[in-house]
Image 1 (cartoon, rainbow over the protein chains, first blue to last red):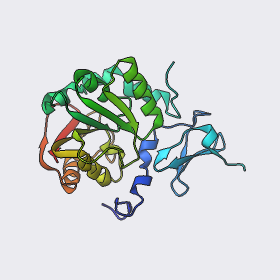
Image 2: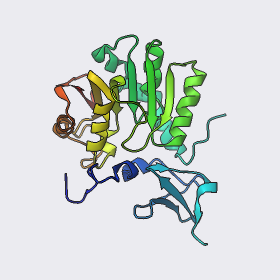
Image 3: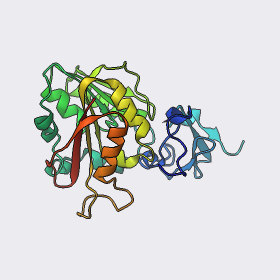
Image 4: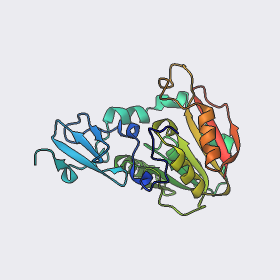
Amino acid sequence: MSDESPNDGRDGTAADSIDPKLLEILVCPLTKGPLRYDREAQELVSEQARLAYPIREGIPIMLVDEARSLDD
Amino acid sequence: MMADLLGMDPDRIGRLRSPERLAYFDPARIWEVLRPAPDCTLIDIGAGVGFITLPFAKAYPGAKVYGCDILEGMVGLLAEDAAAQGLDNLAASLMRPNAIDLPDGCADIVIMAQVHHELDAPEPLMAECHRLLAPGGTVAIVDWKDEENGKSPAKGRRVPEATIRAHLTGAGFRDLDSHEIYEFHAFITGQA
């Protein structure tokens, strides 16, 4: 394991962390445009829709109703 | 009417469901090697569209089959396809990245196909596979071969077989075995 991946499953956060490659299959459900993964905020950001979709316990919640508006 | 894709890219879903994959990745080859008991319990981690889960549940109607994924869109599609095919032995369920909501030692077989190369840190999920398996149960890993063959992803995106084996050993699996059944994929088993 490299020093760049501190998430070794023993720090209590592993279950909540998501591997970014798993997200490549996702697009914004509203615009069908690309998403940017904000690891710190645990959000998937759609700049086009100005929405941020939350990732809760490592599960992306791809619902517009659950998304945070970037303009608020 | 197809289940809500919930943000999944329809083109990618189409490619995952493409029957053309069968030409080089026939899932039936896996159970030819594993020879599961007719009433086994199998967990497919990262089941996706059910490329393995659906035909297994069909081939083993007496088995209990769980198809797990972190994407609700995938779980919805799999549940819909299982229902359409009358597979009441298949449960599609949502998992967290390294946690499946099933009890210790409940499974005879855990399959992870085409998942390993998507993971930056596979160790916690390997440990979860071990937890789910009954003593003597089998973990089955399928992933792209680490070679330039026109199908495998680019170097850096592939996981050498030795690395997968090290992850399995680290998680407590023993009697590791490699099976040459696919042109483009490595297939490794281990015993819990």
